[in-house]
Image (cartoon, rainbow, N blue to C red; front, side):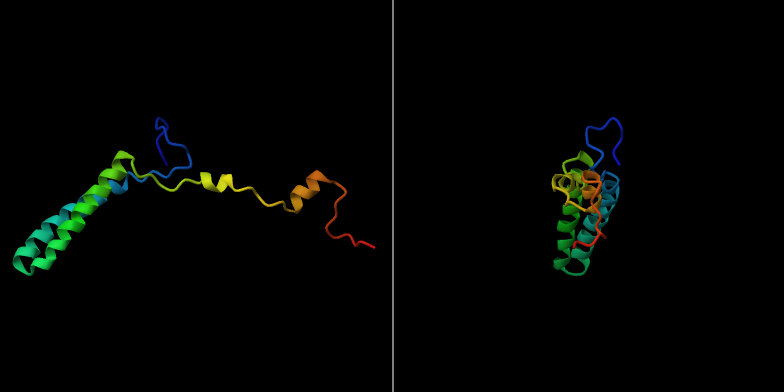
Length: 100
């Protein structure tokens, strides 16, 4: 969850702990892509592009530009009327009573 001094709501998931792992994978992919690109085949330079993408995603997560899924959309959907609401609204309602 987010820290108390943060401006985000409690429904937002804090994804900033993902950023260090993405920075690590970006560094490994960039170094590995350069090494494999020169030693094995030039197609391995694609790993450098993937590493750069990881670095950009890590920056976006760390800066807060990308936040987790918010549950606010769930609250916007009106709840269906169920039997408990009917009982509260009409105490004489009995779902097991037979209508003659």
